Structures are given as structure tokens and as C-alpha cells.
Length: 435
Ligand SMILES: *[C@@H]1O[C@H](CO)[C@@H](O)[C@H](O)[C@H]1NC(C)=O
Ligand SMILES: *[C@@H]1O[C@H](CO)[C@@H](O)[C@H](O)[C@H]1NC(C)=O
Ligand SMILES: *[C@@H]1O[C@H](CO)[C@@H](O)[C@H](O)[C@H]1NC(C)=O
Ligand SMILES: *[C@@H]1O[C@H](CO)[C@@H](O)[C@H](O)[C@H]1NC(C)=O
Ligand SMILES: *[C@@H]1O[C@H](CO)[C@@H](O)[C@H](O)[C@H]1NC(C)=O
Ligand SMILES: *[C@@H]1O[C@H](CO)[C@@H](O)[C@H](O)[C@H]1NC(C)=O
Ligand SMILES: *[C@@H]1O[C@H](CO)[C@@H](O)[C@H](O)[C@H]1NC(C)=O
Ligand SMILES: *[C@@H]1O[C@H](CO)[C@@H](O)[C@H](O)[C@H]1NC(C)=O
Image (cartoon, rainbow, N blue to C red; front, side, top):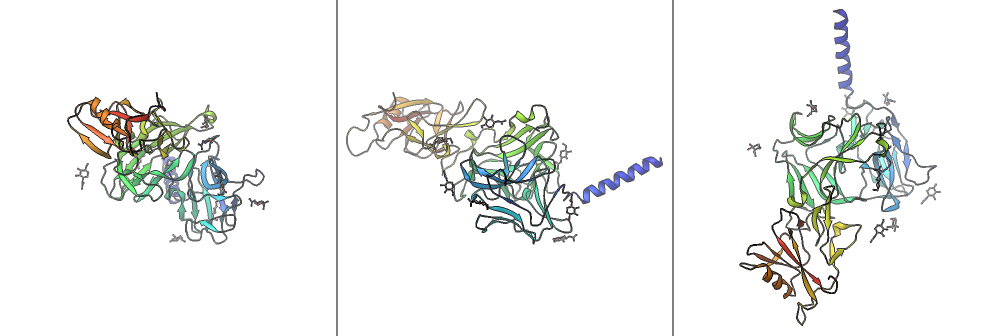
């Protein structure tokens, strides 16, 4: 009996200790006046590691320009760099820039001239720490948390992290470009979790393309360490699941939820390097939202899920794959969000027979939604095609397979292909360019 009572008391004490110190439990402290320099020189390169070695905080060069650096947190022991946080995504810094925990306890990112580029603005910290969760924190002398990177996520959330009311994830612009992208996931204070397409570079918000339709004010998104990403009420009660997995315990797998550059929020897992085959494994998608972005994203302004003149579909791995119509090619194949351009010159409309030198390519289950400049009804397929061919303004016509015909000018928006699209597209192309 006595022994059991003792055990209960010990357990109680342990609970109290862990819960009072739950906010801050540094494993290795980063002391005042510590700094990291942005450099590619291996003799000077340095980053701050979490105690397990899972995460690193420091500088990485841009994939697109090795003379510029992001301050970042990434998985330290995976061969392919996966950045989970950066505060200067739109302001990469040159070589010899630095991040310093100053003598008065400020975290300061400075360029090579010493000009401050970023500072979280927290009051005097007595030390900093990078937790094994991937959270970088500034801690006051009494142990309270002054600031944490988890409170200002970039495009990714990790187990134990919340996306609090009135905060967002902002996608990268491209797979290799961390600057502000075209999609936003917003945890609204009204309790609704909403995906928006946004305009680059101003961030102007287009229409939403997915919403949780939850309405409990001040609820938030929570990445439960059990491996599911849930909407949780202000009191911490589970409401609904956004993405989940039960078969990949966070003890053996890294998990991350990332709003990808194509506008899809994906829940990824990767076996930890300590696990069998872990070091050579790749990130695997176990769940995602929305389930069909090609179908759900329609905007009245902007290009749609893919760039102008391109259309949205999926590759064999069910990843979003934008494509150009026949007769069109990428404006920049490395930046498909810029869309497609015709490989021929459109009719001039100055004189002549406008159909001469052009032909129409018929594609089933393809539509470019909206922005029509004319509509005919009743009209059959063949005439719908001919109407566009004979019209120097017309770049494509769309038929509904029944009796409706719409005419379109360039550029096309909201392109999508799939069995659910009950349209036939006729795309005008130069005869010499496509036969
Ligand atoms: C971290 O720093 C704080 C404040 O100086 C100290 O109380 C704590 O013991 C340190 N922790 C470690 C692991 O060094
Ligand atoms: C890389 O960045 C540097 C510094 O801003 C710039 O001078 C250089 O032109 C860039 N290089 C490329 C290939 O964009
Ligand atoms: C960076 O600093 C090192 C050491 O002070 C110096 O040798 C190097 O020239 C500097 N590089 C640049 C690009 O300023
Ligand atoms: C700890 O320090 C912070 C900031 O310096 C202050 O806001 C907070 O009230 C302090 N907490 C305690 C329990 O003293
Ligand atoms: C909130 O959502 C619930 C469940 O979907 C619904 O029954 C209720 O009418 C909604 N309340 C408001 C104010 O929209
Ligand atoms: C986290 O997951 C565990 C296990 O499924 C569950 O018991 C707990 O309630 C969850 N926490 C929240 C805040 O949803
Ligand atoms: C690393 O990235 C390259 C290029 O994307 C890819 O081919 C390779 O499979 C990746 N390796 C791992 C282990 O993820
Ligand atoms: C696309 O990227 C590859 C590899 O980075 C590069 O070799 C190529 O020049 C790029 N193409 C264009 C059009 O920029």
C-alpha cells in the first residue's frame, strides 16, 4: 500500500513538473552573443542543431541562386533539404550575412553590411533553443517563452504545432522558389479554415477553393502528435480532421503538413533516418486537401490553378500536372505557373481570310471556364468550331455537346481536363505549327 501511495505521489509530482515546464524545456541553450554566418565555405559553415540532431537552424543557399541565402529551419539529417520555416523568403541575404542572438537578447538577421533584415521583435531573451519538434524559441530569464517560430509558420506545420486563429500558411511560388506564392491557407477567427488563391505580388485574395465550413470562433488547426491534423475548439476539444494517418507513428516517422506551391495542402511522412531504410527513403503523401483542386478551383480573376492558357490535370502519382494545349508551349518550362504561349502568330484581324493558315484542334473533356466573349444557342459542334476559325478575335471555342457554343479570346483561364468536364474544346492553332 505504502509503495503504491509513494508511486502515486511520484507520478503526481512528475505530472506537475512536466506541466509547469511544458512551455520551455531546452535541451541545448543558445547563449547570448552566439551567431551563425551565411557562407558556403565548409570551414566557416555552421548551424544550430536540436539536441536529437533532427532539425537545424541556420543558412541555406537558394536552389535558384547559390550566392543568396535563406535563414531557415530544416531536417538536418535528410539528404534532400526540406525547409520547414524561413523568415526572409522574399528577402534572401548575401554571403557573410549573419543571424545573432545579441547581448541584449534580440534575435537579429543582418545582411553582410550589418543592416537588420528581420527581427521577431521579442523583448530581451536570456537564451534561445531549437527544440526537437523543430520549434525555435526565445526564452526570458524567468523561463517564459517570449517568441517561437511555431507561431509564425511559413508553409508548413509540424507535430505539436498549431495554426492559431488569424494566421496563415503561404505556399512557395515554385518547387524551387520560396518567395511568396499563389496560394494561402487561412485559419480565420470565425472558425472557418479556408484555402484562397492569391495574386502575386500583392497578395490580393481571389475566391476561396476549399473551406472546412466550421464556425466555432477562435478554433484552430492542431497537428496532434498522434499523427492527425485536426480542427480543435478554443477549449482544445477535437472537432474534425483535416488530414490523418494512424499507421505512421511520429516516434518512427517525420510528419509535416505543407501547403505546396500547387495549392494543395499535403500531409507527408518520412521514416526517420534511424529506422530501417530511412536514410534513402522519400517523403510520401498520406493525405491531402482539397481532394481535387482542378475541379474546385475556379476564379473570376487570375489564371486558375494552372497558369494562363494551361490546363489542370493529374499525373500517374495523382500530383497536379499542368499542361499546355497542342500548338502552345511553356512561357518558361521551369516556371509553369507563368502559363503557356501560342507557338504561332494569331490572325492579325487587319485583312484577308482569317481562317487561312489556321486549323482547330478538338479536345474532349477540356474546358477553360469563364471569360467568354460570345455565346450561341442552338449551335452544333461543327459550326461552333467553324465560327471560331472564321473569327479573327477567336482563339478557342467550347461546346457543351448539346447546343451551347462559347467563344474565347486569349489568355484562357481556369483550364481543366478530366472525365467530369462535359465540354469539348476547339483550340485554334497555326497550320504550319501543328499537323
Ligand atoms: C538554459 O538556460 C537557462 C537560463 O540560463 C538555465 O536555467 C537552464 O538550466 C539552461 N538549460 C540547459 C540545458 O543548459
Ligand atoms: C544571384 O543573386 C545575386 C545577388 O543578388 C545577383 O547579383 C545575381 O545576378 C543572381 N544570379 C542569378 C543567376 O540570378
Ligand atoms: C566574407 O568574409 C570573409 C572573411 O571575412 C572574406 O574573406 C570574404 O571575402 C567575404 N565574402 C564576401 C562575398 O564578402
Ligand atoms: C516572465 O517574464 C516575462 C517577460 O520578461 C513577463 O512578461 C512575465 O510576466 C514573467 N513571468 C513571471 C511569472 O514572472
Ligand atoms: C454552424 O455550423 C453548424 C453545423 O454545420 C450549423 O448547424 C449552424 O447553423 C452554423 N451556425 C452558424 C451561425 O452559421
Ligand atoms: C490527440 O490525439 C489523441 C489520440 O488520438 C487524443 O486522445 C487527443 O484528444 C488529441 N488531442 C486533441 C487536442 O485533439
Ligand atoms: C532527392 O531529390 C532528387 C531530385 O528531386 C530525387 O531524384 C531523389 O530521389 C531524392 N532523393 C531522396 C532520398 O529523397
Ligand atoms: C530550367 O532549369 C534548368 C536546370 O536548373 C536549366 O538548365 C535551364 O536553363 C532552365 N531553363 C530555362 C528556360 O530557364
